[in-house]
Length: 178
Image 1 (spheres, one colour):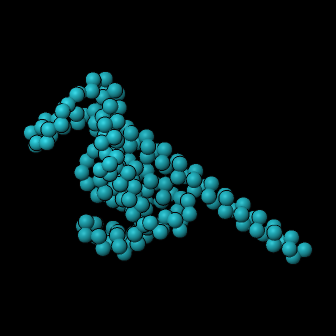
Image 2 (cartoon, rainbow, N blue to C red; image 1 turned 90 degrees about the vertical axis):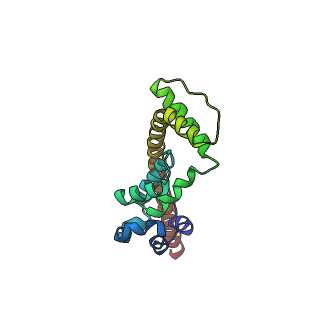
Image 3 (cartoon, one colour; image 1 turned 45 degrees about the vertical axis):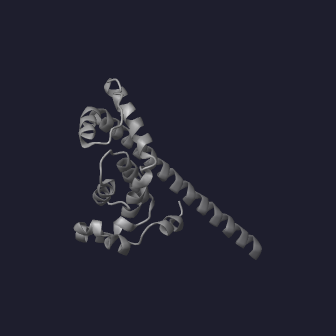
């Protein structure tokens, strides 16, 4: 994947360091590895971001930032990929992860009616948390693994393509000189 395409969409290291939500990380944000764009850093960032987007927890961007620091991968990219689970996609993602978790645990899915109250919310979360969290972890690990290897392959393909283009250019230049 071309670095220029990724760089165009990501914030600069200075913008990330200036983010008030990340100020508590202090000097940890000064690690240059958090902003490098190489095959390893981008692949791990994709895995971290996609895994975190499947977690049914608030503060997914913060979790992605902490994991990016821990794995020393591209911080802005891992945080941006969390937005795969956004208000539009969240219901479908969490419904399917709940169904997967219920199937794996062998529990029948619990039908429910939506009622917007704290009592309903706490009661329903108490009933569905185990299948939802289990399915979310399994889905997150699966899709993070797929994303990691897909990015490794895409990056490798792009590098080989550029090598071949340079080789063809050199051959053409040599033929012109002859």
